[in-house]
Length: 263
Image 1 (cartoon, rainbow, N blue to C red):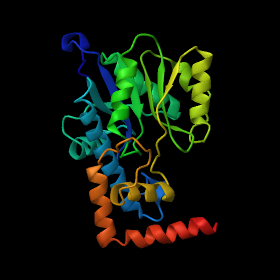
Image 2 (cartoon, rainbow, N blue to C red; image 1 turned 180 degrees about the vertical axis):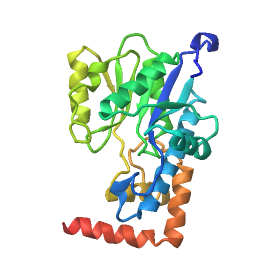
Image 3 (spheres, rainbow, N blue to C red; image 1 turned 180 degrees about the horizontal axis):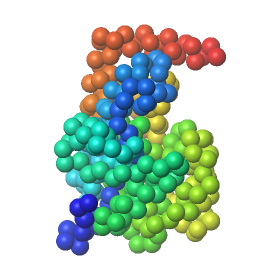
Image 4 (cartoon, rainbow, N blue to C red; image 1 turned 30 degrees about the horizontal axis):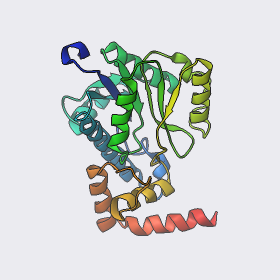
């Protein structure tokens, strides 16, 4: 792996890794099926990854931020997908373990091994995440003193976690994929004496309600958090527009919302 030396750049260096999975129908974004088909869900996975990677590049214009994809499962097919879909020079980190906490920890440690003073992991479900939050994370991590930056998700998890040192304890005894993840992570930080900087809550596009929120942001000029400017998410918007025009997505979103309300 190419080692990034911030000393030669004369600026604090922050690495941000997206926790990524190669798109495959029936294996990616399955919680969006229905109202999406398996193929459409895989297309959204690809669009989200493209937007998040572009968002990190945008943040790099304001801070010395370097983007990566921490991916799994490993193999040449996944590598070919990312290099062919994102960009041929994308930086890839293999991070595939049974326990998701080990995946996160491995990604962060590889960022430190690459020479970054700040290491950040972000999810692959928030294509409109404001660029300002990525920039703010790098700024916070560049300040003196140890800390953790946490971006809580509205479902109780987190969309971002940033550290400036290796802290495996942050990922121990966490009940992953539950509404307790962010709270338990804050508890672990308290146990090891780490100050926590909380970013504004954002949402993950992982169910019908979140998909409708994404539609409202992209096509109805709705603002998820007042005062924050969403990332434009060009790829996600283009895909959704296509499905709205030719795939009947509007009626499917409406019908699915009625079904959820009736439950």
